[in-house]
Length: 444
Ligand code: NDP
Image (tube, rainbow, N blue to C red; front, side, top):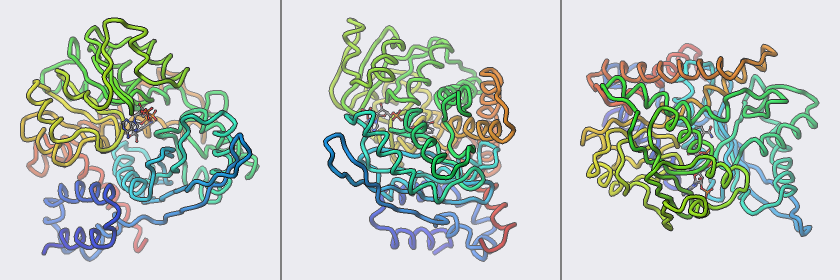
């Protein structure tokens, strides 16, 4: 067996109960085959793949909190610090009942490559808890966030590890966690990103992942002689990434025809009314089914179904493993030209292969959703320099970073004779920089 296959087999043997982590490692390692085989002795001697797949440390802790009825409740908290070869650990915190060590490890592993692609000095990490903020009162969410940070604060810092938001963690949760860190440590520092504007947050952070997704989609289409103007776009999710993806897609002249949440999806052939979506999701925190009360021409369907709609561009922006082989077949049959991931690993390996084999332009999340962490990196720079850049300054930097990522992954794939394979390009470009830094720093 080759070095790469040996390591993959070892990881599979060691972590049989971590399916999402194994899926992420397999997807990355398989595309690195041409790189590894060119210099196998070196990579083996340096144990590069073993070092990339094993986190620096994994912290798992109890999070006790008190609900409104006075009962003690307990959740599990995680922070997996994956790799700090090129900068302090950086990656979001997810609060969702599905959170477990496998999911946090897959996200932290992917984050290392993603952060490398941004060109900014940030290592990879991820954290979270199986706490579900849905249906909890403001006081309960605050109580949970404070308890979570009471433990987490021992392991993070502006030059050590800088968490941000993710599913279930928005400005409200970041605010409560920042306040608690400050109380315990007595230090006002850029220890979290995605902060409110009045206490060190960056303009355009809220919009960054969604806007960045559309900047890279725009560049992808432009380089293939197409544009977004007049294109029908299908989006899944109705959270932070999905809403600002829909906003920028609309600004660039596309028509967004679908959005969804975990209970169902809407189809609005005239183009989604974003003011209505923002009111339902950002203000009232309600279900997307309410959308039909705002637009009588729209349809609401229970369950999954976003990818059955005819569209030119598909942007999965909800969660991991939400676009399967059957969905890919439906998209291809309906003439989709590009699938660009807003979420992390939303497309299964089989679906990705089917899309690529059928000529669909496919960009993986670690490249296309890097806009969020890129602006988090810019928030860190502003915090360190005691600066506040304007929305336009941040947005221009974000656009440049996303355009650079596209050309970087395109060139990396072409260097290994895999023109147009952006999955391989993203993995190779991310890998080269991190490995260069890791091997230069000796046994660490
Ligand atoms: P939000 O919590 O704001 O929104 C998530 C959306 O996806 C909601 O509409 C939610 O529906 C839906 N969703 C979540 N879980 C499921 C599920 N199991 N099945 C169906 N729908 C689901 O999260 P974000 O928008 O921040 O994150 C979305 C994705 O983007 C994640 O994969 C995240 O890791 C990734 N990402 C986020 C970044 C950011 O800056 N926020 C940066 C880079 C990547 P409901 O409300 O019903 O749960």
